[in-house]
Length: 135
Length: 271
Image (cartoon, rainbow over all chains, first blue to last red):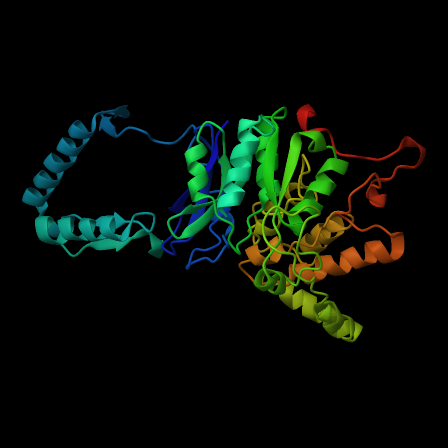
């Protein structure tokens, strides 16, 4: 019999609300707002209150998928990253760096967003950087 | 505090309880936690802060999976009122749940405007005087009817339909929630229809609400929900003589079905 809470940050938007994942016997069963968190002060929106629901959703991707012909096939991370790197290099060579762009996400951390814009600006050479919060 | 930790440890060792639902320190944050005899060292992180989590709501989550376990739970005055209602509604068995009583600090009692900031038996803390304050209700009662209506409509219009008031509420233990019934409430749509969304909840709080105020603390729109439910609570005691949260056999009169007895929700193990 185990019930514990894991303090974490809501992944749904860039506000960064603190929430507690309720874990029973290793399974995430619910969410509570973190009452002492300076951002949300014990409050959540409907997305935060249900932030645990995608964890066990059938449609959740747990492995990278690589398109082969008409189908998406499960692949290793090495294979997926290799594919991306090769395609990016090829597109950049053929059409120039501004033919590429990236959408980052409010669901990522500040550091992850920084790294994504860095790889596009410094490694690829384009300012085509945007994010999901505009959508 | 050391004495308190030792007391919990003794309850584990004697087998009187198989788990203790309390609060532990997680860095700077106090968070709910189930302490168990298998990990007595975790009691070192046990804390009693001036922060309230919906302990009885969490207890129900645990009891649904472990209906036969003997559990201790940290209870303040509000938690004890909630437990009394949960017993009457057959959600917990009183013989399996041990109340570990905490008297709230004067600061907490004042910020909660709590009419009973301590449980029956106190294992930690000193009893402080109850706070009798119905200025919130009085302020609204003295408004002319039209102004009062406009006031509530303006408050309800701030709602973002997060369901936080329902989610955090220890008294929201129904198997099916009216607020998620598509025939009554347009689900999947925000904002909610006002005032019906809030009035449905207010009606359902009659005979249930134990005036803990966690709903209002959880409301991102700062709607004075507690004032609304306190008024409903007063109406229940005024018209029907029922005060929710009191211990004993008397049940919510709104669940009375005449000779057929009471419409008490299904037992926890029948779910």
